[in-house]
Amino acid sequence: MTNHSKTIVIDDAVPYAEAIFSHLGKVITLPGKSINAQTVKNADALIVRSRTQVNADLLDGSTISFVGSTVVGLDHIDQEYLTNNNIHFYSAQGCNSNSVAEYIITVLFELAEKFDFNLTDKTLGIIGVGNVGQKIYNKAKLLGITCLLNDPPRLEKEPGLVASDNYVDLNQCLTADIITVHTPLTRNGKHPSYNLISADKLKQIKPHQILINAARGGVINEEAWVNTNTKANIIDCWKNEPEINESLYQSAYLATPHIAGHSLEAKVAGSTMVYEELCKTWNISTQNDWMKELPEQPNIITVSQTNSIQKALNEIFNKTHDINRDDAAIRSDDIQKLHNKYEKYRRNFPIYREWDQQRIKKTNSQKLNNLLKKLGFTLV
Ligand SMILES: NC(=O)C1=CN([C@@H]2O[C@H](COP(=O)(O)OP(=O)(O)OC[C@H]3O[C@@H](n4cnc5c(N)ncnc54)[C@H](O)[C@@H]3O)[C@@H](O)[C@H]2O)C=CC1
Ligand SMILES: O=C(O)C(=O)[C@H](O)COP(=O)(O)O
Image (cartoon, rainbow, N blue to C red; front, side):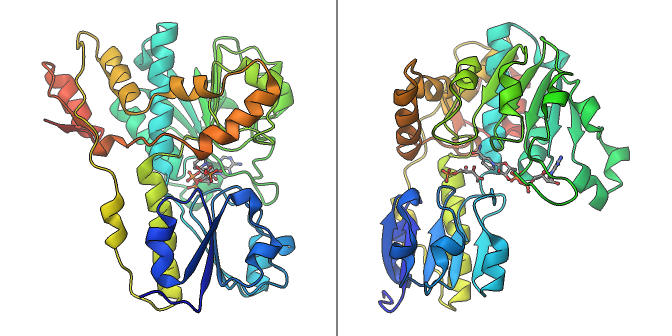
């Protein structure tokens, strides 16, 4: 039964918001950017993704006592303000890490196909080895890709990692053939990541190297990146989204509108993690009736050839999430059109499912079948 005494304001990009949250109170859904002081003034809970700045300007004078974020980045949340004002805060850490990891692996196989190289001959540098970075590393290891890892904050907490894995300093990590960044965007503390790959660091980059940013705009210095000669730039996260830098955009071999973490499983995990926390906070039992609204399993994937395992994997990954489609969806030489398409496309992003939801028709290659199972696919 709905509790009409509570009001919950929710970003309308949170899937199944009404179905999941409505038994807890009156649900008001709004575009994340339209959530303002007026709309939250008399509400009890606020549930955001990444597009709402959560701070004193938004919450001063409101009745909000719970803020939930169904995404991972925290750079849009003034956590100190929330703590000082006794507002319970919860964010769904880890909810979309597998989605981002699958995006990166898909990108790697696409690059290998396009530039005709063997991934097992290349090194992959992973900067930030948290939920996302660790999953990329685990998958890369299964696929025989050599990795260099960089995460000074994690090493301080787990010094034993240096001995057991390929942890290196940032300069060495920047020598990898392909470099991918997965730190949060932070400006303070002992290891701020803003401008981590600075203009100076970018001078070390050689023309054979590939740079990927699916973390946040600003971790790699965009102004210097535009003028850095690389083999390819892959960019999912930008400064000033959706008004992204035109020159950097034109320099990108693959440019996607901040969708690496947008698998259905990631979005649903973010929503349910916040939902469970809100139920706990309000001391209400959880319900799962809304789950009947989830779509059916995707169709079985067939692989057209198995002579090259790398090519077969590229085909399969693309059939689960077509990143070229995401790039093409926003491509435009007219920057204004690009900016408009950017936000529109990500807000209406086509549903895709993670590998562990996918069924593949058994191939005639035992090696490929084994690899697919290890990557989470079901063989039928
Ligand atoms: N493109 C997309 O759709 C998505 C982007 N993200 C971004 O990726 C970031 C990482 O996500 P998770 O792995 O889930 O976060 P996490 O918090 O689990 O991992 C971040 C890791 O970065 C490390 N780190 C922090 N500062 C560093 C520095 N200066 N140098 C090297 N390592 C550093 C931390 O020690 C930690 O291990 C998020 O904060 C978010 O901004 C996350 C999900 C989706
Ligand atoms: O979790 C994060 O951090 C992300 O970057 C999300 O994938 C972004 O989600 P949106 O709310 O911007 O769709």
